[in-house]
Length: 281
Image (cartoon, rainbow, N blue to C red; front, side):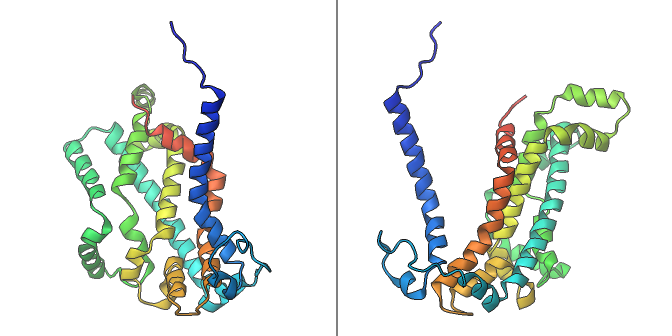
């Protein structure tokens, strides 16, 4: 029996170099944004070279200026509440729906599942007019319900959790039913602990989607007090509050900071959850 040979040192070095180059190209825009947020307006207007890559004097005051100029603390609070509530409710709905499609047998299950998948094939831009009309009919315009309710379930979330729950052995569920457990007990006691990495990954996806959502809030939110952080950063970039690239970049850095922190602390569960959904029975 032939065994797999380990790649030679030059091949491994070339592979690692390629990975580092790809990572560098992805990190470069974030590094440019961070460094620009710490420069003066004159330095930010100069063509980027190796000589002026770093700020001559680190302008940390750009951050409090950006917060004060656009009242980012208010929008930060709005985004936090909307993202947290949306994440908790969306994970609950999608996990229960995924459990139903994966482990329960009922009439029309396949048809409903394929209809759910069909919603993934159209972006928001294709049906936002109908979504807006329905939201207006329900009174979900210019309030937080407009930002939360439409995202309480998604085709991707249901499909993702269905794949994760499918990896749970049916024998465990049958043993639970013999012990007298109902469907809710099976989900909470058996399925939830085994699918926890996938649930964590879905929570990260849901939080990122809600936190970064720009198109839908732009349509349904009119009041300044109800705006979320992406809308405030867009107003900054358009020069509504100020015309300063460093302060705009400071606001953008504040925008992505929670996503970086969450992924840093949950990256292991995130990777396990993504790998779990690819396992078949």
